[in-house]
Amino acid sequence: MARKCTATINLSAIKKNYLYVKSLAPKSKVIAVVKANGYGHGAIKVASVLESNADILGVASIEEAIELRESEINKTPILLMEGIFEESELALIEKHNLIPTICNSLQLKWILNCHKFIKPVNVFIKYDSGMGRLGFQDDEFISAINSLEQSKNINNITMMTHFSDADNLESDSTLAQIKDFENIANARKYDSSLANSAGVMEWSKSHKDYVRPGIMLYGSSPFSNKPHIDKLSPVMSLSSPLTSIKNFKAGQSIGYGNRYICKNDMKIGVVAIGYGDGYPRSAKDGTPVFINGVKTVIAGKVSMDMITIDLTNVPEPKIGDSVELFGDNVSVDEVAHCCNTISYEIFTQITQRVYKTYV
Ligand SMILES: *Cc1c(COP(=O)(O)O)cnc(C)c1O
Image (tube, rainbow, N blue to C red; front, side, top):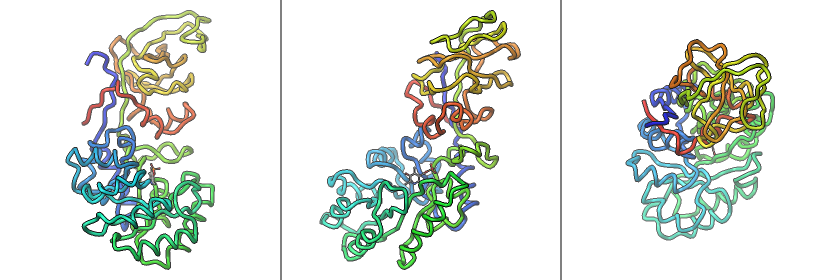
């Protein structure tokens, strides 16, 4: 490894965050969400840590599920949270112990008309309680459940819905969604699943039979206005070495577009990470980084392979010193805030060029 641009992933922190989920929602079973390559952390590694604890693993597509199955992740059922995209996927559901979510009338038709199951399969059925995306609305939800009940293809049914604004603690829409869901679901005897991470952490009324945490397992806060949550342990630490140190006079400019102009005489360092590694180009001047025991900031536009940082007050910087972009000392949520985005996007945009190491 020459260019040591590295994402170090702390697997015991994932376990800790999982136990925190259990402590918040002790009566609920857990669907650990590992979609999008485990939020960029490596789905196979994350799943291998969680599969003995979690009741179900949650992914976005059958490709993601089969990748896990082919890597010996065989202990737990895997929930396809958007269901299947093509009828041909039905044949793989039993083989791989997958649970499809039924989100629309075509998926419903496919599963009802399928004659290939040896044993009836478990399904989730999605209700749209206000997200306005996937799932059945009111009467269609009821008639979809009725048709699943009458089908010999179906074993257990679990009812699920997804929140649109659970990270907003000022909004009453989450309570409205819970109420709406309960109005339609409480008359039925089936299990249900509502909570994402924000629901697990702040909306205890959403703790039903299953909770579905994602981002909190990776140690990041689902709340943009509450970036520091002591009980969550950061999982990914992104770091890269310093590759240049130079002094500049007041008035000199740094980087593309001359965005940063030195206000005083300054020492500027170059770090080997850029948007080609997934570090956001939207990072503004002042985005924090951590080096030699202190926090300092980005000065100048992010390039494809490099960023420039202010070293003026950093003790004894040397070429090769490791710079933390986020991790234990700079929270990913702080960085996300400076990039006008959310940690979910930062994690999932880390590219192949970044080495991943697991501790
Ligand atoms: C991604 C996802 C989750 C997890 O959301 P977090 O905010 O990361 O906790 C839960 N449920 C569904 C349906 C999802 O798509």
